Amino acid sequence: EVQLVESGGGLVQAGGSLRLSCAASGFTFDDYAIAWFRQAPGKEREGVSCIRSSDGSTYHDDSVKGRFTISSENAKNTVYLQMNSLKPEDTAVYYCAADRWGTCSSWYLEYDYWGQGTQVTVSS
Image 1 (cartoon, rainbow, N blue to C red):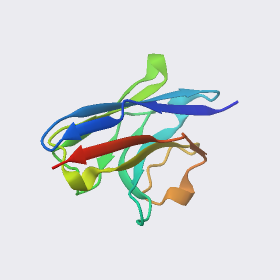
Image 2: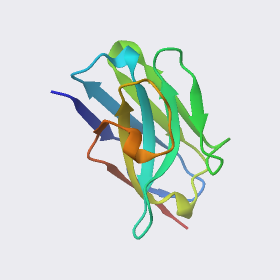
Image 3: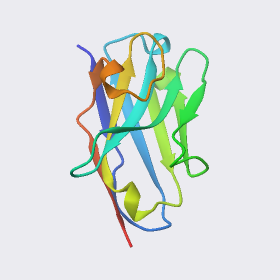
């Protein structure tokens, strides 16, 4: 059974940091691309960052470049999202998602598996 389990969300003040984790099981981690998406109330789900497990290539949306860093620890089948200099507009539910073709896309429908999400709230 494929599972993605996010953790690490919470409440933080603007300018603070959080590290999200996505623990994957039930599939060959090295073949996949793992992405972080977020969805704020009343808004569409948007891609934040992505990493290709095969070669470690990373991608970040312009809105988080220089503040967020995605990384993976393949031996633990875990992907991390280090979020620094957080802003109130980063407030959302953050989801990790897996693409079995190993391709990073900003289009959420491309992804095959999803976690349950973790809430990130940034206060001003």
